[in-house]
Amino acid sequence: ALKSPWSRLRHCLLQLMVVFMESLPSCTPHLAPRLGQGPTATRKLGDARHLFHVGSRSARAKAHPRSNIGLIGLAAAPLYGEASRKYRRTVYHHEDWLKHRTPRRFKSLRDMLFSGVVRSLLRQVLCVTLIAACVVAWNLLFNGWVDFSNVQHAAPLGYRPSLILRLPALPFTLSTSPLGLLLVFRTNACYRRWLDARITWGRIVSASRNLLRQASTWSMAEGDARKLEMEGLASWTWAFSRCLSAFLRGPSEDHDLAADLQVALGQDAAARLLSARHRPIVALRELSACVKNLTVDAKDKTELDKNIIALLEACEVCERIFSAPVPLVYTRHTSRFLTTWVLLLPLAFWVSFANSWNQLAVIPSTALSALFLFGIDELAMQLEEPFSILPLEIFCAEIRASTRELIQESLR
Image (cartoon, rainbow, N blue to C red; front, side, top):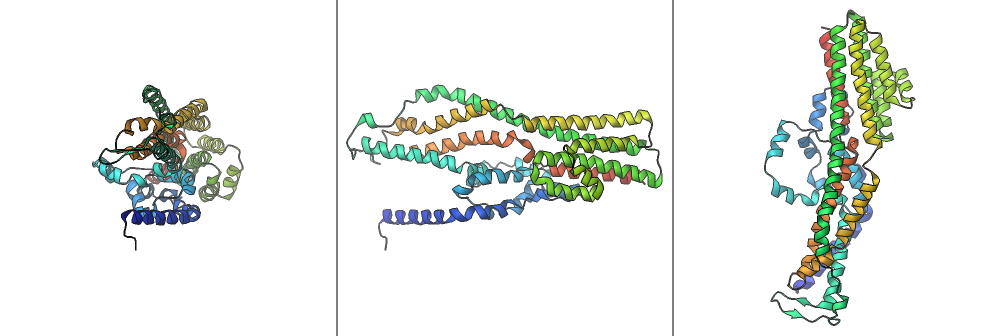
């Protein structure tokens, strides 16, 4: 029987350590099935309202309850940061905005351990916390400690001021402003990239709708010929956005892209498009050919071609954002500055906590500071490449649904 409180505490800590170490080998293989089924990963080309609902915040919360996303192990932390990006493709509806405006600051604190940012930073924060614990243990050996009655106890290895690990707070005070400016500039630059990507895809949706709206209104064809013209125009309009989405997401989208194109364009056209080096440009060329064959006036064709030019310009903007990150010299210098600053932070904290009973507070203070400062840099990193966190599949599905609706209205 463990009668002593300290014995019970030590026994509980040993049990937690055993459970944690046993979970490390199993956390990585179990992570893939948990993260591989995203509600917005659906490839349905039907009703866009269904896709918007599936991609909404409330639907994602129901699909992934907290029981499925407990704290992961150290080995899976880097993997989670990248694999969880598909769950950040948020689309808001009325109920989501109502919930978003509800004051929930304390609930956010309660859910902090379930945050994706915390899981991504688990290794870094634990490393800084371990350094802080080593600094405290070393200084207690050579400086002594103060108990809860504010009684100073002698150092176990003798009082040796020259061996105490500490730094004055002045260098940190002077460097706080430059570090804050670097983090703010980096976060703003990355957010601007995300905003530009979102605006660009809004223009793609708008230009696609305008193209079908104008063509369905100006076309002078009748019957089956009109239906054939409109369906070809709609299919290649959607094919451009789908190919651009797959290009920005990477080779992992090729399998789904091939299946989608075969359904929408047919076997031969899909094979020809998939074999192209730059699929979005080829899709635009086919779209231009469809506009050329429309039964409309030459002046109207010029107006229709302006929408295709807008799509091409949007493609160029997406390529520019994707291929040109924030200058690496800026990113690396900010990361080195921040990491050095945080790693040395326990030495400055010790000066403030050394002469009171709460000397152990250096450890949680360092951990929280590392979490929030590293978290700001992690937010910028997540926003820097925006296309894997934007709901591109929902934009493509909305283009498909709206063009189909325009065609149905024009054939009545």
